[in-house]
Length: 84
Image 1 (cartoon, rainbow, N blue to C red):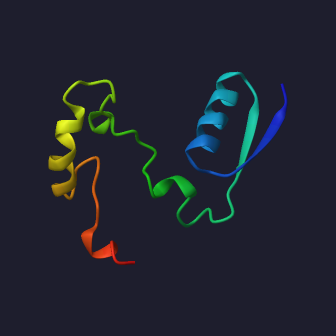
Image 2 (cartoon, rainbow, N blue to C red):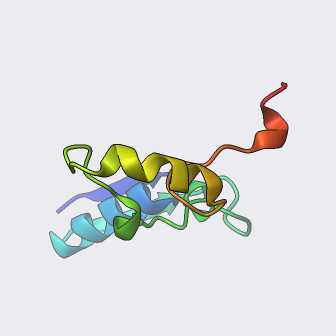
C-alpha cells in the first residue's frame, strides 16, 4: 500500500484520510494551522436536516412571512442590512 499525503485537515481531508486508512494506506495530513482552527470549524461540518424544507410542499409559500420574521428561521433577513 502507498503512503499518501493529504493537504488540509478539514472535514473533507479528514474523511478522505479515514477512508484511505480503512483501505490499508498510510496517511499524513498536512494542515497549515495545525494548532489553530481548520476550515471546517466554522460550519462544524454538519448538515441541519430539520432546516431543509422541500420547495414542492404546497404550503411552503405561506411559510415565508413567518420565516422572515424569525431570526433563527431558514429564510432570514437582517433588516439593518437592507439599506446597504
